[in-house]
Every structure is written in C-alpha cells, then in structure tokens.
Image (cartoon, rainbow, N blue to C red; front, side, top):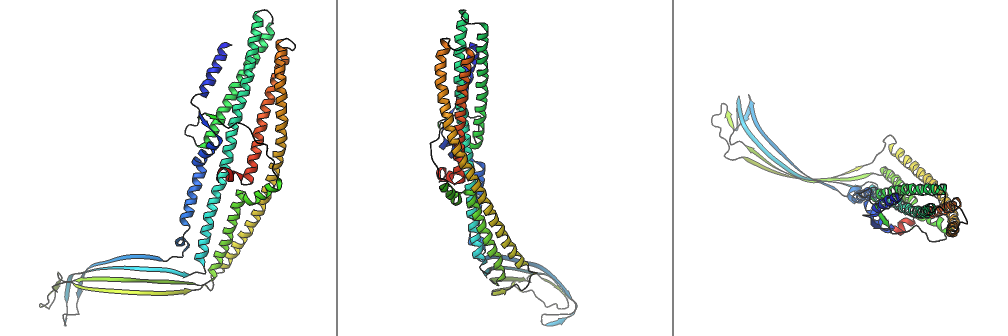
Length: 458
C-alpha cells in the first residue's frame, strides 16, 4: 500500500511539472489573438474595407492607355496601274514596307445612373459594417467558449483537490486500522474494508486527473496552443460575486446590444439599399466616352523592287513619314423603355426580400426574449441552489470533523465514518458544480445582452 501511495504522488507530481500560470484575462487575450474564426473574420473585414471605395461603386471614370502597332510588307502586282504619273500596263512592286504605331488614351465615365453610384457606395459601407458586426458575433462566441472552458478546467482541478482530500482521509484511516490490526485491536474485515476504500479513492483520483487533462486539452484547443497537452496553474478560482440583475434592464440591453440582433439589423439595411439600387435602373444613364489617339506611320519604299515597262522608276531616298492626331468626346444618353419587365420584377423581388428580413428580425427578437427569460430564471434558481449547496457542504464539513474524533474514540464504526466521508465529498462536488452552473448562467446573460464584448473586448 505504501508503494501505491508513492506511485500516486509521483504521478501527480509529474502532472504539476512544466506548468505555466494562466489567468482568465490572459486566456481570453490569447484566444482572441489566435482563434481561427476571428482571424478569418478579420480577413473578411479587410476585404470589405478594400471594396468600400467610390471606384468600386462606379462613381469614378475609367481611363485606359492603349498602344497599337501596324507592321506590313506589301507585294503588289497589276496589269493596269497608274504609277509615276503614267499608265503602265503590267508592273510588279515588291518589298513595300509599312510601319505604324498608334498610342491612345480613352476615358469612359458614367456621369449619371440614377444615383446608382451613391447607392452602391452606401451599400459598400453597410457591407463593411456587417462584416465588422459578424466579427463581433464570432468574438462573443469565442469569449463565451473560453470563459466556460477555463472554468471547466478550474472545476475539474478543484474536484481533483476534493478527491485528493478524500484519498488522504482514506489513507490515514487505513494506516490507523493497520496499526490497530497489528496490535490486535482490529479484525481482518475492518482492515479489508479500509483497504477497499483506499483503493476506490485512489482510482477516483486517477480518473479525475484524466478528466482534468481532457479539460486542459479542450482549453488548449480554444487557445490554439501548439502543444495540445499543455498544463496550467489556473490563477482564477471557481467563484462568483453575488449580483442582482433587473429583468427590465436586461431586456432593454438585449434588444439594443445583442450582437445577433445588431447583425440582422445591418443585414436589413442592406436589403433596403438593394431595393433602392434596383429602383435606380428606372432612371436614364448619361455616359461620356472621350480620348485622344496619335498615329505615326512610316511607308518605306527605299528597298522596294519594281519590275515593269517603266525603267526610269527610282526608289525614294528616305521613308515617307506621316503623323496624325485625333481628339474625341462623345456623350450617350440611354433610357430603357422596355426590357420584358425585368426591372420591375427585380424591384418587386427586392421588396419581398425586405419583408422576409423584417420577419426574420421579429423571429430573432422573440427568440432572444425567450432565451433571456429562460437564462434569467435559470440564473435565479442557480443562485438559490448554490446557497443550498454551500450550506450543505458547510454542514457536511462540520459533521466530518466531529465524526473523525468519534471514529478514533470508537463511538462510530468504519461504515458510519465512510458514509460521513462520502456525504462530505458529494456536498463538496455539488457545490463546485453549482458554482460553475451559476457562472454559466451569468455568461449566458452577458452573451445575450452584449456584455461579453463590452467587458472583455471593448
């Protein structure tokens, strides 16, 4: 039995080694910096910020620079061609080279589109705000998960401490009975009973250590730690301040600050803007198309070969060069008279989408109201349950202390003392669970009323 105690001590000592301290605030900060979902949403916000510009909305003109080249070598044959001021039947002109380059600048600008550019810019601003709000939803969910994951690990750690206390008592009892047995003051059945209790508590401690390790792994997953098996010394204890909430204040905060409602409100404004965008197609459009083209053309006949009846033809000494500049500016006014009622159908569909959005808002508000009422009732009940379990644990602790003396002086037997031990352990475990349940209810209320963002990510 001494060897088993030594093995347990060595095992638990190894678990404590290489642990770093971790507070709840540090865990939240690490999680917000590393969380995959938050990093993805941050990239989506960057995309929305990049798109939120007048150029994307179509307000600014488009300017293009074009350069075109024309190169050719011409071989010409004719039976009746006026060349050199005379009519010469049957001639052939080979290797007539022509080179040209035409750079140009064109400007295309939609001057008026029924305020479509202004509406599109407003929609881009709303899309950016929606992306930022979606990021807040992910942040709130992440904070909630980290808080609960952290306190689950704290609860499992404190459970381990309670089980370890039970094991220490069992060890002391077994040593006490073993000493009495060696002196002939205890029977074999008493010794076997205490040995069984000691072995049972040892197994419970090992299983609880496994539960704590799993809680740490889940926390590491939320914190995106490279070492999934990293252990911590958790500096925040499993406790909660006694705070009284007013349901009316919670309801007002939920309807004004709930991140899900704020997100759907922004989505609804985008649907309204989309309707305005479709209605803009009813207006005429005025566009400008202007630019400048410049051409330089070289006609090279210096190496041309001529065969024909005119033997006096001589090639020009230099290439012939011509330059041309062309300016233009044209306005186009267009109005859609009939397009198979596509514009009207698009407007009607956009209005229907608005109606659907309003229905979804009403539905989500009802869901939030229901969830808030449920969470509030749960919070009140769990406060009362915590008070009950705290008093139960205090009474069980006093009973355990008194029973220890009674057991040693023989007033109660091992069975009775074991029942007292189990009652205290059960009360302590229930108290820890009650504290965690109350923390869970509080975090749920904060999530519904937007408090997680305000407190942990202002």
